[in-house]
Image (cartoon, rainbow, N blue to C red; front, side, top):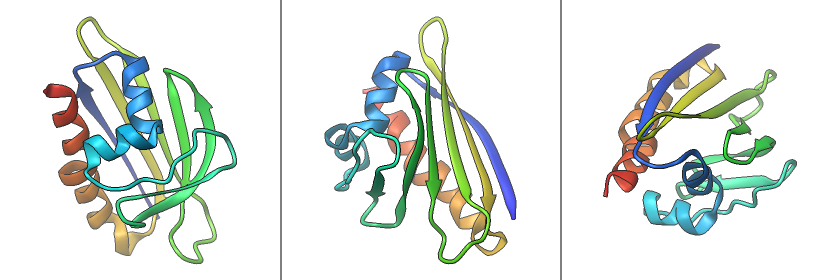
Length: 126
């Protein structure tokens, strides 16, 4: 199991970034894909045509989102934590993804950088 941590700059406020990550209509706007997402602890979600599925395990509006991602029959939970740090003219999104299966690590990191975050950053750059 491996962990991944990175930071991304979003040209928006933490409140707007939070909505962009938790509102299914906004998720569809930046991702270009349907999303099933209800911002409530204990709710399951699905994004990117079912390629990302999990359950919401923590929410602090405008500040933090914590999700458990599903990877088959994995014993230890794979947890994604996104923390939104306000900066002068932008939001710094701190991403932590723990317990990524070794065989999936490179694909997950590529997905974060080349798909998920690149689309989100581009959405807020417009």
